[in-house]
Image (cartoon, rainbow, N blue to C red; front, side, top):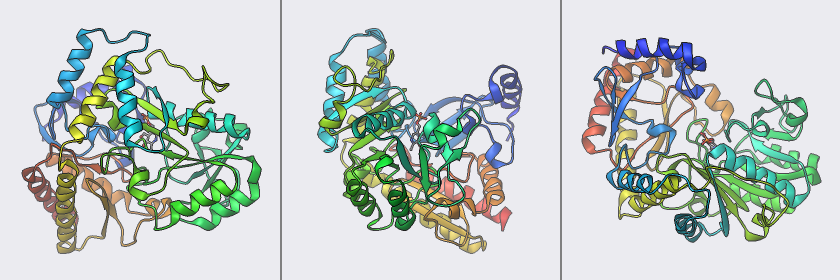
Length: 429
Ligand code: PLP
C-alpha cells in the first residue's frame, strides 16, 4: 500500500507541530514507530487517506464516532448550528434541551454542566468533590486514564497504598502526594488505602468499565464494594464515563452495572464528534459550583451551539431501535472470527468484549487489571497492527486501546476485517 503523501505530510508536520501530532496517542510510538496515516475523509465506517487508500475504521476517533463518520443527521445539525452562529456567550435553548436529555437518561445526574473535553469534566468533578467534602486526596485505579490534568497524571508508588509519583514532567511531587493509586478489580488494596488515609480522601475516581488498558469489565461485586466502602468513609464516588456513557446502551455504565455514582464525568460520544465534556451529579453536590457555590469552573466555549446540536443529534440516532443490538451482534461475530483464526494459526489471543467495543490482547492470560495488560505481547500487537493497516483496517496504534464498532459497520465490513485478520495471523503464526 502506497502511503507516500502521508510520509511527506508527516515530515512537514514534525517541523511544525510537536512530534508531528496534536495528541501523542496518534503517533506510532506504541507500535514501535512508523508514519501515522493522514486521513482525508471519513464516511460511515470507512476512512480514505491522502494517497487514496481506503480503510475500515475501528478507531472511531478513540470513541466519539459511534454513528460512523459524517452521519447525515449529525452533519445537518452542525450545518444548521453553524448557519445561526457558532458561539454566543449567552445561554441557549439547546443547552436546556441537551441537559434535559442527559438528566432524564442518567438518574444520578440531577444537575449538569457542559465543558469542552473529558479532561475538563474529570478535573472539575475532583475540584467539586474536594469543595464538598473539605478533603484533599483522591484514590484512583492503576491504568485508568482520566485526561491530562495534573492530578490524574500520577501513577502508583511502589506499594498499593502508597502515595503516587508524577507520571509526567511538570506535575509536582506535592500534587502527586494527593493521589493514591490502587489496582483495579482488587478490593483489598483499595480498602487498605481507605483505612490508611481515611478522612483525607475526598473522592474515589474510577472508569466503571475500563477502556484505557484495553476494555476491562469490573468483576462481579467490585463496583458495589468500592461504592459501599467509599460511602462508609464519607468520600464521594466519581465515575469517569468519558468513554462509557452511551457506548454500550442508551445511557450510562452505571445503569448497566447497577451502581450509581455521586458524580459523573462524560465526553466523547455526547459531542457527536465535536469538542465536548460534561459533568454532573446529585444537586446538593453540584450546588458547590459557581455561580451557586464556592467551586469555580468556567468556559468561553462551554455549551456552544454547535457541540450541543451535534450531541443532541448523535443521541437521537442512538435512540433508534436496535442500534446497540446490531453493534453487539457484529461485535460477537468479530470476536468469534478472530478467536477462530487465532486458534488455526496457534496464536495466544484473548478478547475482552462488551457489545460493540473490544480489545484483542496477545496473551494466554485473562486480563482483569493493568499489570496483566502490561504483560501482554506488545511486539506481536505491533506486527498485527501494521499488517491490518496494510490490509486496509485502521486500528488504534496501541495494545492498550479498544476497537470501536459503530452503527455504520456492516456485515461486509466484518467479513473483510476477518479476512485481513486471517492474513495477518498467517504471517505471524
Ligand atoms: N477519561 C477517559 C476515560 C478517557 O478515555 C479520556 C480520553 O481518552 C479522558 C477522560 C479525557 O478526555 P479528553 O481527551 O476529551 O480530554
